[in-house]
Image 1 (cartoon, one colour):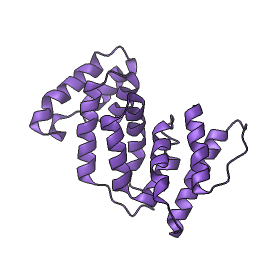
Image 2 (cartoon, helix red, strand yellow; image 1 turned 180 degrees about the vertical axis):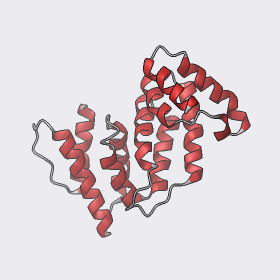
Image 3 (cartoon, rainbow, N blue to C red; image 1 turned 90 degrees about the vertical axis):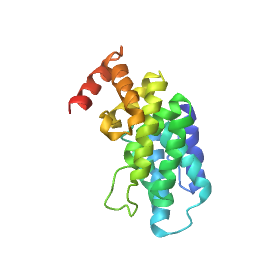
Image 4 (cartoon, rainbow, N blue to C red; image 1 turned 120 degrees about the horizontal axis):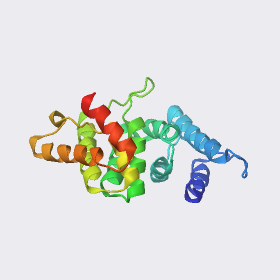
Length: 195
């Protein structure tokens, strides 16, 4: 959490936002919200969104442990940099990042793929397909429980979603989830397979 707080502090400075007072119980929440609002406001006004903000903003999305709160960073990033660029960065972290980064990218993907009334950027079927393929590969290859828990809810588990060469991998993902020691994975896979 200390790394995340330091990153938020740096991000606030980078985007020129006034940080909340240190030591407050909800400092992380207020800092995340303030940074996101500053980026979103600058994007909305067309007033100097800086390219150097992109990597720290993506890093903050990935480090945010609560998927509900990552929205406060993802939506402004979409407005400032576009859906494709944000999703490509998340895909890179999912495909090649350390387990914690892959899990964070999967959490942030949910918000990056939502269509909001205020978003002029449509979702890309090609990027969604690439995400599903990458997530399937990562789910099967990475034994990290957090990675699997973060990927599974948005992982289609019907072979028809994938080309024939990935059907065996889909079956393996289902087998892994069904035989996991983790009750969440066992429960979640049944919802997805039967739902």
